[in-house]
Length: 291
Image (tube, rainbow, N blue to C red; front, top):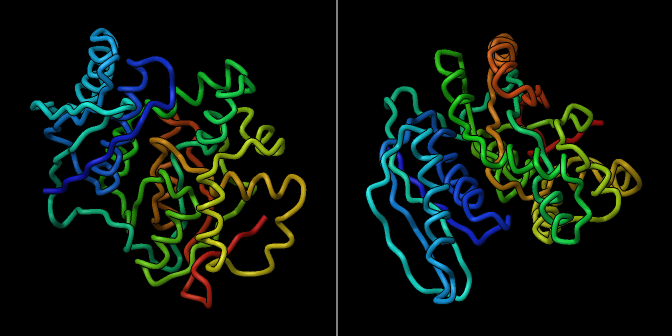
């Protein structure tokens, strides 16, 4: 049995979409362990001024994603708060010999990321009406998408390690995997899948505050001279690697042959999936970046 809990305030105006995204985000940890969600409990904070129709829409959005995940919602708990917040406490199950953790990556493995980066940048830009509608819609679609298919399509392959990429950004979660695995993870910047308009907005300096906190945290663990990443387009890619993701994709560590098979399986389900790096024997620093 595996369990997780996650909830947060709205990042979109539409209450049904907010419920979908929050539920997909909470369910993601279960999929990152190779498990199937079974039952969940709602966690809901609401201001007294919030209309009942809005509350119903939030819960309906969460139920929609739980239903898609074949996960029953068995009630929950609601409290009054000054700001709406919603999420799930989820219980799932996986065979003990098939549990995936972020500590299993091995030297020689490659890294596959299943969703594009940039949701933090896009939603930050949306607050200032700087995100174009197609980019915003794609970001919403990706945030509301379950990692169910990626988890199921990886079943039977030689997956050594897995984590979902959420609030700590790609580099933060890669750092956790590297440290837990006793290895160094090398990320290829040019291979990263990015949401439409994400790089353009990052080059304009539209960066969420969480990205700077993530950067401050991972910088001591990065190999080499960061000065080469501090100017122009390269800086924007570095920012996107630290961009806090909402309901981001799964990061798999697995042998290259298995990775090619996984990418083939994912092509029709999540065409954003990319091979973005490799696992090296442990070096002085746990993270390495290449262009």
